[in-house]
Length: 298
Image 1 (cartoon, rainbow, N blue to C red):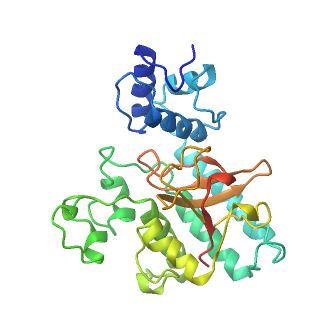
Image 2 (cartoon, rainbow, N blue to C red):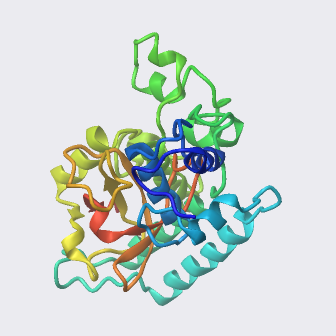
């Protein structure tokens, strides 16, 4: 039983229901359109399946799996922390300071990168409650500076937002997660909570195209996918465009999603740790060529 873009009927509706179960937010109308196609691509990437947008046997099995008793978050996090400790001890990270990557990392740089990634991966599995809220108690430390995870958002207050409608919402938090993890990791090393002004960003970032990309462009601290393989390393932030789940999409004009590079593979893909992905802190296997910019912050 295969369904793909252009299909319609009860099978498509079942796919949409299962996508919503996993937090991908599609309309359950029985029509396999662009939004469902993009959600299938994202789901396939999250499960290390062939990313083709076609719901075949393997994708059906993954969609229908009963995950009610699964709790892989802690084991996965511990495994990734062990991997990161190994990188630090080997002073690995693939940095040579030659080729297309214009920066050699010091041992202190490596310490910072590893700690930031460790603090990020230990959040794996934290999710919005309720789904779609951009907040809730599990994410309160990340998205609300230790508040209750509900409006008014500490992020809006930090930026002195006056819009009453915005103040009733919690902001999208993928870039907030990157900003938080950098501050958290560096605070861990410093033994005290750093002020936002003491972080490399200088402020509490929350926008991919309004904050993170302009910051990197001003400093020249980014590379594009053409720098693969030697120029893409763990710890970098990456940015994706509005149609980021579609590997065939043209390079979009504005960034809409971000996260961290966790591991780089030799097949043109990389592993991530990112916030606001399926309504939680999640990990995906993404295609290098789908990225707009890889940004180093150290």
